Amino acid sequence: MSGFKKFLMRGNLVELAVAVVIGAAFSGLINALVADLITPLIAAVTGGRQPDFAKYKFTVNGAAFQYGDLVNHLLAFVIMAAVVYWLVVTPMTRLMSLFDRNKEATEKQCPECLSDIPVAARRCAFCTAELTTVPAAEKPPA
Image (cartoon, rainbow, N blue to C red):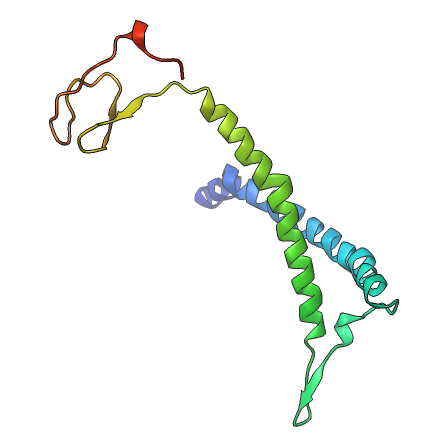
């Protein structure tokens, strides 16, 4: 029983549960955006009649294939993916690049074999080439 309690109290599980709840709420928001704003916008562009994609279907030998609901979900997915990309991924990438810019280099590339080696190395560990070291006073600014 204690192992199960430890499993439930792990940080990743709690974070995942919060992410699922937020994702479900976000999904509802995006579905409302598609139904209340995007679909009427399509109606305004295409001639004033608001399309109800959920009613679109075709039949083959009496079997009805309702593809309109798929169109609604596809629109919601594309919008959600775009919002996540522009509001989460892009700012996080920019923020991480700002943090990485101020890091001092700990490795350099061997001029002979192009392997990554420590900055203070005088000989490459991979190809054993002798390296010229630049004194600290002569190092160009990063």
